[in-house]
Length: 325
Ligand code: PHE
Image 1: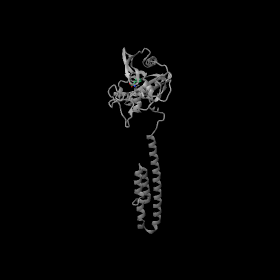
Image 2 (image 1 turned 135 degrees about the horizontal axis):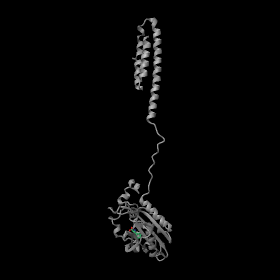
Image 3 (image 1 turned 60 degrees about the vertical axis):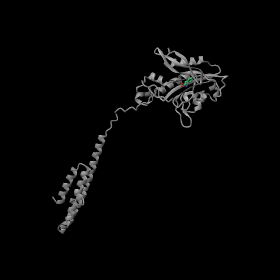
Image 4 (image 1 turned 135 degrees about the vertical axis):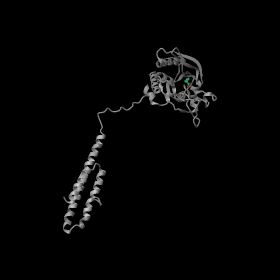
């Protein structure tokens, strides 16, 4: 065996034994690099007798090409097997069942509002809305609050820059809906309201529903009839109502109402005949028209209906609560 043949055999074995492309780079350098074996042979040609030089040079060059060929083959084989290993390790079982996306749920307040609005639209009421940032006039002045009324105190009301307030009740929607309209009409107004109050039974933001009707002949008896029907719809057919005389600047006479609940009474909201000053402030002639209005919170009802134990839980936005309902 010539030196070149021995070298080729050695190279072939080393190339076959290379387990990675890094191994292969080293093997190639060992045989074909500038300081490698083939280069060594070519360098030593000068020391040979002149008649041998040509043959050894040709052999060495052939060896170089062959080794280059084996390196390339081995490299391709290594790449193929690492690709196969890659595919095997990322095997995807397309027959596995997929993960269902979580489904949304309506908040208890939204559900109660929808129920309430269904009930009133079924009785011919239309839905009105107003902004949560309200003028002092709509929230207080037009509703016949005197300038020194305690509700206008900073203790109870959130004031906004520029003299506006976060509405403290849904009654300002009465002003917006009635101004520029000619009776008869009947509206319900659902929405958020704000008061400077925060403890176990009060949050600074809560929800009210307002209802009002104006016609040339409507009485407190109509108001009571509507509220009775509403109470029975909300709390069951055996529900009774109790009216207690009360005061609101925007209704006269006024009452607070309670509904029968587990052998006792539960406070529900306020109501009354719309004060003539309020009608006048909206451009409605109180000699020709009269109306009534009521308003109540709905968060308690939503809590009772869906078994939410704490008012504050209602507005923390924790989906784990909604998932239980
Ligand atoms: N706006 C009153 C409140 O928030 C409720 C009410 C509405 C009373 C309509 C009478 C008529 O307490």
